[in-house]
Amino acid sequence: MQNYEQAVGYVRNFLSDNHYCHTLVLANERCFKKLEAYLKQEGTDYTPQKADEWFSTYVDQVADTDRRHYKVALLRLRDIYECGKIRSEHDTRHFMSYTILKDGLKNSLDTFLLDLGKNLSPDTVVNYKQSCARFLAFMQKAGVCRISDITFDLLCTFYQADVHQGRWGKSQVNSHVSAMLMFFFKHHDVPYGFSILFHYLSHGKGCYWNTVSLEAHDKIASAMASSSTITARKLYEYKEISNSLHTDNKYSKTTISTNNRAMDLLILFLEMNGYGYNPEIAGIWFEETRRHFKNDLPTIRRSLCMAADYYHSAQIRLEAVCLTKPRAFDLLPEWCRKAADRYVDTKEKEGWKKSTMDMIRSSICRFCQYLDGIGIRSFREVDASHIKQFNTNDKHKTPHGKNAYNTRIRKFLIYLGDQGYLDNPMLFLSLTRTSAPKETIVVVLTKEEMDQLNEQLENSDGRLSLRKKAMLLLGLKMGMRSSDIVKLKIDDVDWNTASIRFVQEKTAVEVSLPMPAEVGNALFRYIMEERHSKADRNIFLSEKAPHKPVGRSVCGCALDTALPDRNVEGSGFHVTRKTYATNLLRGGVGAGMVAEALGQRGNSSVHRYLSLDTERMRMCPLSLEDCGIGRWGNGR
Image (cartoon, rainbow, N blue to C red; front, side, top):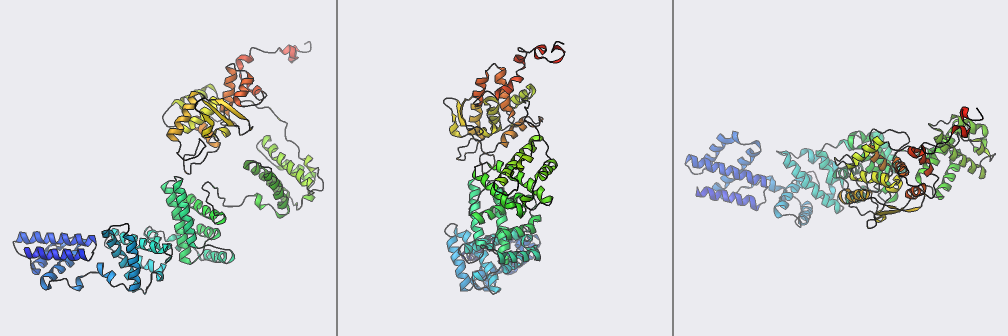
């Protein structure tokens, strides 16, 4: 057996020295061990005839993936016995791919392998060499002389034609080739799409560029001719910036992956068809392929909207809300748009908040659309009868809502009169109030609701998050408005004096309120145990990336979570402030001190809560006779 072991050692060294793949080397080792066991069992030395006899009886027990490797291994062993070396015909293509490459492709591959060797082990580099040489040999056979000569069609042909025994082998080759193409993309030799094509083909994503209709292609061609575009490489640069920004803001891996997929598929479509990028082209592609995105549709759409925003402003705003269609105000008829735009501009310069400006636009839009609908084509045609007709036909759920719109329309009419758009500048007087001001009944939490709320605040079952508990306690124990709670800063809380100092959002009055221990404990627990560690001075941050300051609605959601069965129309989170004030009055605290605790300048608004102090109200009744009410008055 000594000669057999020497021959096997020679074959083993040959495979190692010539960098054959690990899979093939292991298959040869298995073959030689099993053949050696057979020879020992038979008590005979190796001969080519004995090896053939063993293989013919054992071949049915060999796995399909090993059968060809075993056969070639026995041929190499025969070569050693017969001529002392392995014949060239048994030097298989796993190594031959590299040797047959011409200088242009071989030099390019060597450059890639040299760069790869800086970070990977020699054995891993050898695996890359075999896979990439296999790919380049295929390209060379197709007439490619340089890396830059490769096309998308050739890549697709290679993907279909390159057959492997197992799925793992094909996946390995594709990943190695994709890494090489990414290297050459960074050196500006090939498009970015080359490096990702195999990945998306293996996942059946070809529909994202193959199912786009001819009509859509015509629209894109028209958009290319009529508007400016940027290259797909610029879009890739945006993708890298966006990916880094999402990662820094702790977005989930799913969101980051979906964002990347959106850009990858769009870039593939653009590069395969030779298109540039602008938001209009991306929109046409999205409408053609949106049926394939399924559950990822909102995230994909957000990605494309953010790319469009970056195209126009060179900035990425993670929290931006991207509209799919223009506002109704922007679609006003030409005859009224100029005056409406000028009026809105004056209001914006006055510094009104976004919500107020939205209300102004909505009111003007409703009024102008009505006038246009009855045939008005100039503000000079408007008279008092038109204003009254509008007021009669304009429906709202409540008188309060109607007054809110009419107030803004009345101011718009005053502006039109002052600027000379109306023949009669006093037309604003035609729009009357629907109802007089009224006093509303104060709504507070009932005893049953307070008991249920306190139970939830003390419970640790996870139904209420630490953030929700802290918000509810700030409202219930300190009477803070939701607008002030969500704007609280870390610096507003003085832990040494157990107080909170802040400027009220509604009144712009600075107040300093004592902080009860349970409120302080709730805030501390939220900050230390649940709040994201993002360097933001706001105390309350969103639970999901990008962990930005929250809005007022979050406080309302906290109350809804704690009291899911509560359904009192017109009563939201502000009921906690009303309950706080009412409880102070019921506890004997004077109106002046209650006003101070609420951060109010006067007592007028506090008087509304006095009617809820039923115990003290019973102590000061008035005689009906003294008031002249009913049969006790006027001597009856």
